[in-house]
Image (cartoon, rainbow, N blue to C red; front, side, top):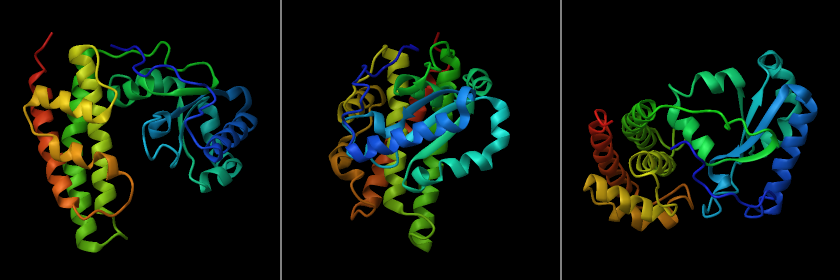
Length: 257
């Protein structure tokens, strides 16, 4: 259950545009120079590791495992990597202790990192990280229940106040991304595998939950393409129906061995 779920790909990240690869390498180099031996690893995570994602080049995300003592030098680190971050790179800092000791309470997030990441510096930080089935099931249910409230409230705020508060279409797209992550890991937990293609993943989820996913599948190709959509409410309602059905199913797995 804890084995990587995404097949190994070219270390050169050739599915990303050259400008994005250069930005990632620039950030890696600056982090390595600034942190030196206190930098254990850098992993590319998120949409950038998925060659099929249309938005894979937008805001590449780097997870950095650093020595705890260096966290006190946050201002210096921010200054060192300010330029690539201003160009859209996102950097997340974590210590080895935080990674090892939080795999129970953040089981879903860490399962996703372990399953889908590209190591670009140092040693693989996930090689020995594990979690229990109970921890993962609970984390998935927590994510799904929070997702329903979070997306609904973001759309409400965006529609009432305008895009200065939040963008309803972006809120729904972010919610779909979170649902797909949860769906992937619960299907792997239950069946030992999950489809890699997103529409197939939702169809498999439909088999388990008996909820109609056709409306959401229909908008997947264009969902992430723009921050505006004429069918935001339809997509939101389709998303929430699937999320609520999946939450009930996951909740019912609590007593499973």
